[in-house]
Amino acid sequence: MIDKNRIADPTTHYGPAKHATKTFIRQRLSGALNVLFLIFFAWLVVRLAGAERAEMVSVIANPSSPSCWRCCWSASPSTCASACAR
Image (cartoon, rainbow, N blue to C red; front, side, top):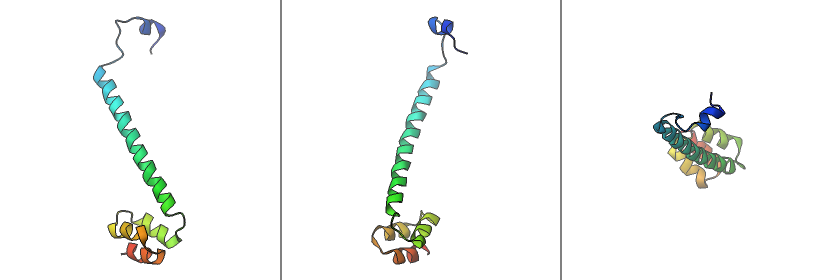
């Protein structure tokens, strides 16, 4: 427990500096990854906003399919659903 006496005494230490640096770097990396995931999620929601159910299900069921993503950029929903089903 950190109390006023410990804070007022400059001879006490709160832990090694390496621990604080690791925590700082870990927080910044997780924050950057959260921003990237948020951008991806916002793009996905906007992209699928007017899509039919078949297209949504096919994109969400297999998001790593390159043909599915390539097709979903500019094709019609029926074409995209058939390409994503492969």
